[in-house]
Image 1 (cartoon, rainbow, N blue to C red):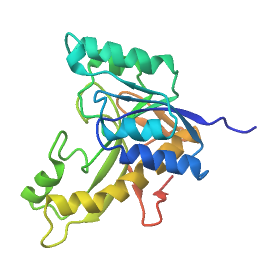
Image 2 (cartoon, one colour):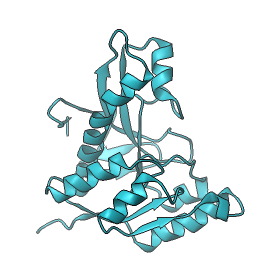
Image 3 (tube, rainbow, N blue to C red):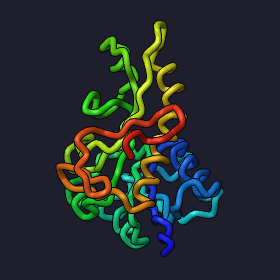
Amino acid sequence: MTTPPLTLAVLASGRGSNLQALQDAIAAGALGARIVGVFSDKPACGAIAIARAHGLHTVAVSPRDCANRAAHDEALFSEVAAVQPDLIVCAGYMRIIGAASVRRFEGRMINIHPSLLPKYPGLDTHARTIAAGDREHGATVHAVIPELDAGPLLAQVRFAVLPGDDAAALARRLLPREHALLVATAGLFAQRRVQLHADHALLDGRRLSAPLLLDAANHLIGA
């Protein structure tokens, strides 16, 4: 029996490069998925422009049009619920999602974060890596839970911090690896191999004790 395409709702606030990477992988037949909607808190962001260029369903709700954070979450995530996604991908979505909305989609929401979690949740991860004198940097895909950037870790990509690197250099080198990591991880969901829980993730029914690692050929080691 053929597995139906995984339906994805993508949340984004910025330029949309991770969204583009997902769409490119789908178009190339490398990811068995279908994007059923792109959702944002910034109507003029690049992600919304990319989505419209691809003819994707888009919804943008500005926080300025809502009474408070809870009202914004309710407005945006009611639109997400309407497209009935198998998986919600936070791909550069920069607002903290309230606990009620996270629980509404428990087990169906992932985020890509530009650090080797649990190091450096939140913002300014490249600069914090440099300031700490770390020898490695990377990105992490994790399950979303109410606590910020604290959900079970699914997969990571790592690379060396080089002498003379600054935050901008790390960001440039990380971006294509981040794209590959997100596509590879989404592929596991498309194959129905992952189950998310509040405090752990299962791969093929086995509890992940450490995140999978993306190799130079864009394969997840151990998957």
